[in-house]
Image (cartoon, rainbow, N blue to C red; front, side, top):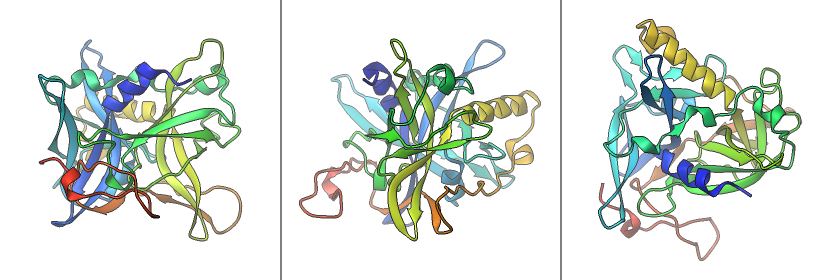
Length: 303
């Protein structure tokens, strides 16, 4: 069974990333906050997402969907802007081979505790030590089609089974498949699980980056980049910061490595950064017909 405390902690750490591209449309992705220890004993908070989320958003600023809890316990959706590129280039740090990006972020007062510890990220030995196996249940958080779980802007939780074997070592198998409906808007969301070994340990297994398609037909599979590459990207950031090097000078993002799965020439993967109509903070509600969820304007809080 999934660790409830860690699930709630990850819900609080996961935020919507969006960028308006017109009065009615915006690009949407998902990210999550990680607290990173520094050499001087302090810590900084970074936002982790899929690199293509930032790459597909052309303007200099994106909106981060913070949630603020009031004195009565109610939550409000209060997004604020964050700069992701300047005239000198991108200001995020990107893994040189995988679709992972991290960027230092200023968190509103009172929300620093929302970030998860970096120690929760799986490393290159976690899958082996925890005996992760095909069929294990995994969870992911995100904003499918730009929708949230409620008007407070919290992410939607989804579950699926690990659909790949083997999954280690990461140098040979940097990504794995998860059997769930990977929906546009979920790009960059955390994928996490509780191992079945002993009492079980809950950890971040990776970042959801793609959906699998075959000849334009979705196969209800998501592609996850292993969390060890988040660790590597954070280490690249810390090294660059220690040397006083601007990320756009040392880690100028290139196109993500192509992500393909075996099975034939037509099998491909598509990223899930979503262009949607409507405002951020919309909540999902059950649909009375086909086509998934529906959203009405009165569900969106004031931005």
